[in-house]
Image (cartoon, rainbow, N blue to C red; front, side, top):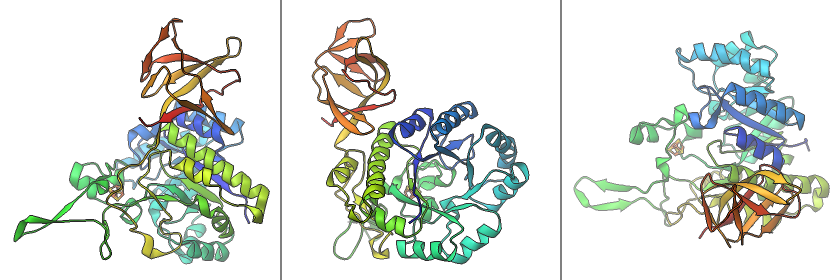
Length: 404
Ligand code: SF4
């Protein structure tokens, strides 16, 4: 079994720091108009340079996504950014197409290349092709099952392989979809999907416009346009046995709270698997923990059988039992108080938990104190308040409460 890498999305510097705190082995980030995510999930070069330094100090790798399907006009930006990325010391660049590969090899030949899942690599010969072009790692198509992944790992053992193990899924082939572009003029292929596949649809027959067919799942039909979210936490031994190197979590657009929970949960599971080997069992508390972040119900996706790909349920909207209420900004070890940056809302007396990397503890919120030292009854998004805590809280730790 190869050593695994837990690879976490970091949409900005705060999320990168969250991933470091909760146990990522590596993070992936977007930069300057070249990644397949909207601007809100991309970092400036200055932030990325700071993030790379902090990550490397903890022996964590940073991969930069430049996986846009570059048009001619994008190449100018790519030529500017690739040498900058190499200079700040990112550990690899993720690309999707041969034009960017050629540019990388001429501008930063020393920088390892990872091939994005957007390239839809689905078979052994395709992996050999990309290996021969100098690609170091392939993020395999999400549509492969674990048996196919294992066959590729066995046939091309010199290639690093990465697969998604958690996060949102597309009904289209790895995001190659125009639904959002048609409905909202926001293109998924430019990283700006508004996720209209999650909406409810009616199918109208032209001669019976008042008798719509609701697209949903019953014994014969499925809720065609939507998908549950991927979750493979129960199958980590099978995944590692397949020969995969890197286990990737989806979600550069998602919150720091999501990053905290998925990183901590998969870290605990992978560490337990390393320690316990064949005695390892997935704990129900890890599955429970993953239900505390926003999800649409979980599925094993394509991992075991193709006939499970549309396993969806029209009753399921977004499920989330808990929501973030703050992030620790500072800890005063003399006063034994945490300074909290409030997210959403927090009221005195709310039942709040602090997520530490190895523990979850209840917080006394009977008295909220503002930055002028005055007690307050409630705090709103972006307010800063003090809360007492006897033991030291790490900066960046996340607080949450049950959704009211
Ligand atoms: S609309 Fe849905 S299927 Fe299409 S790219 Fe967006 S998330 Fe994927």
